[in-house]
Image (tube, rainbow, N blue to C red; front, top):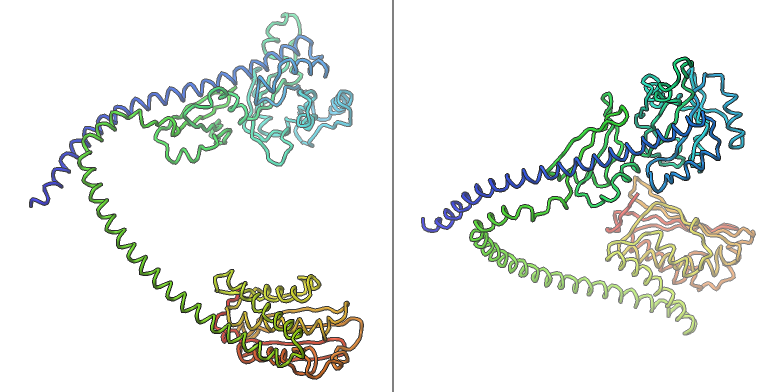
Length: 563
């Protein structure tokens, strides 16, 4: 029973401390939530203030046009917009412009006006069946993006048309729903909206003399806004706000994202506080959602909770840490012992494997040395022949070593041996076949085989002359149980390969490219028939030598075929 007393004491202290900690935490959490809501309110106010400034700018532009009875030249408009310094002082506005309100069929005067003002031709576009049209006739600043919008009939697009119809009905400015701006001529379109103000506006109409005829709306003073840029401009100077926001246009049940902070999605997944606010933007309802960032949830805000939890849990944590450290030490000792035993086992296995591979390699080298010496006329001939065969073994050895002795690709074996003999004479296109890989035994045997075939093709076969060609193709046969390799040497000049081969001494080391049977031929036959349980057939024509090799894959024991 006594051994459970420490556990009982731990649980009693922990329970009292937890209850007190929860009470303190809830009080601090409520205070933190109220603080975050105030920050979110101020952020939305900044966006609202910025939009109000921009809409006031549209009112000023309308007044400028009204003062001149709408007769504003391109130069005057450019000077007016330049003085406003839109880029540096009103980020998010792509320009200020005028769109004429005309009936369909009255496009000719507008196109003439555009051509005269900007150089033409400047058609009104796109084609539409709507009875009224609002082509853009004036837009500054006149950059490449805004030039692309000239002549665009905004009334032809439903979202823009709805905003203009609202402005006509109320006589006041109206914002459009989210659209892809015509100015965005790059491949990646940016979402935005437009603000339309009837020209002349309702204020101008109300100040006209009662006897005068009521003026009709001639068009719209308008501005295209990039929603993301407008938000970023509104938050300039508040870059360290500890929150992320997302703005959606929810007018009439819509749900289109206008702006989203770069890490909004990641922050939302771990957010503790969420504030939803609405903003009326010229008749459109924007829903703004805010979440706190890690910077806002500074642990120091909860220092009372932390101090209380630390004080009440200190003894329990100390005991748990000691037990945990002890268990960890025991587990580490066991792991180190197991690792040591595994290391010794791996070392012994590696030594045995190395010993086995060295014995095999030495036996192969001694056999090649004896046979090469028997078939060589002098020391120089022995040295050259033996060195080339050793290099063929080294090539296969390198490929196996690079893959930790698991496999060597057939294509790489071929390419290595052909490059050794021919340099870059044989193009990669001459090798064709699926991806096939072999283990140590097959790789060594095939490496020597390809070396012998290549050496003798250059000396006596189809590549003895400069215009000779070589192609090697391989494929699966018998439902993948066999690999067939076709080695084809051709001499386009027409001279006979067999005639050339007949001039070689009967004891020449020709490996199968000529009718005689030297050490190369025996080495190839031993590699294919004895080591790989395969078959090899040779066919000599007047201008072509064909060597066909077939290997049963299941007999190699280490072949891997990858599609």
